[in-house]
Length: 607
Image (cartoon, rainbow, N blue to C red; front, top):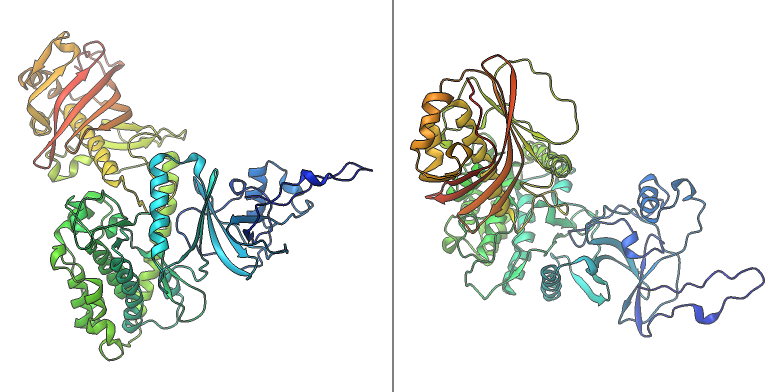
């Protein structure tokens, strides 16, 4: 990136000609539509979906949002923004002849990403507008560089009216530029709820365009892996604008119809059973996601849904969806048939994109699909969109504060193997400084305090939890939860529940054993029968900053500090501290504690 800038001469002097840094000869100039002259990393922008949706041109650069973005980054007082001279910015890219400079229209800037920004730009010799994704490669790891190269390589192959097209991919020292179609119509799902009329035939037209894009990428042996509403955009605000598939950041290259394990990637509600089972997979994963999208297009809510991600995954793996009344009573049998063929658990029997395009409900929609207005679908879809946006905002907030609150004990789940207790509660709170809630009950409690940077890390790039490490996050969360349950069983004096969570050959180093290695459950049983089960005094256990290390597919280690508050025999409050490490092993789908190491002094009697 370079610009023709001349230094301001001192009074009475002329500026030296050699001071201006010349742009390379034979270069192509894309001008930033905001007229801003800062370096790319100084510009607030948007990271993620290429071909982003931008606000209509004409938004003032000195609007509060623009001032906030520029002033904060460049370190200048916001109040002086309007008084500063506006210097046009040009994004100069190698390979195309320079065109004369001209002032461009101003557009609103978009949110900044971690390593990239997206700016509206203009090709000078044609005045054509594009979206330029500018990546700061100095901050990228070697793996990130490979992903960037893969995304550019894949996007160069794809030229279809229903796919956001890559026009240029340029590398320079410290930065990489991806120049895409500028799509201004917003998300497809947001457009649908703004329509006065929406029918099953309209849904057929939408899925037809989506299938066209999927069929095109599959013909080029590309699998998208992240089909979802956020990646379905409209080319413009015009009625009947084309649907365009965007964001190939997770896309992979495959060998024809061969299946292989390419890693755990996607967005939870749209993942296929084979990905969740960690089986080899390929093109059929995109068809499964199309089935989920079609289901939503018809009734406004997804086929698989649960706040608990583990339960959501169980639904998907079992293919547990249905067509409930009354909303599905007005959907034609042909539409349901296509969904069933898309949401087939066995990927080998799942319909292909080419076959789906030939399905009567798609290719003969004028005679097969219903033309009845689906007002209930529009209303449900409006709520679905609101939930998506709200969830994104909540996830973003959680990454900062990790503020969780649970009203019920985690032990109330029958599958946990731990009996529910009426005299204990489990709550999860954040380390953020906030006013603690007023306790209206004298019942014992267990508190787990998570460090905001540990446990399960989220992505700052996405509000939809799209990640190749999603499985790792889920497993870390499982380890934290099962550890909470084990400590809850100890506090309750429930030896039966304790044995269901621990391996029969549990080994441990603990102060009570005076530094000796103890194997088996008998040593622990003594404390349960003679101390813990007879204790009726309030107990408050705090687990500080659990750190989880996943070891392969079926093993994990968690380390934490445990604070135990209790009332002694004289009615005085006491606190003990121990540093603990537990090793977990998964057998037959169930996590068991196989080793335990505790430091500190022997625990004081709780009687």
